[in-house]
Length: 75
Image (tube, rainbow, N blue to C red):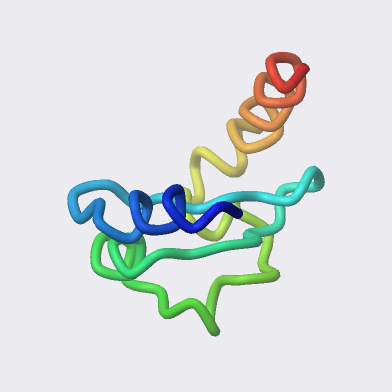
């Protein structure tokens, strides 16, 4: 990741920014994500992103639907 992009991401405080691997596991986690979502990077990186959603959304397939949408626009 280029240094200027990394600095930009680090400076954002009002949005939880993180990246997922193709399979939906959390790959990166910012300080803002910790502040907003409550997970330390050690607690969330490597875990399936459904951990960030309410149980009813997980049960209704929202996570899989969002992964499909991301895959379709990824290019």
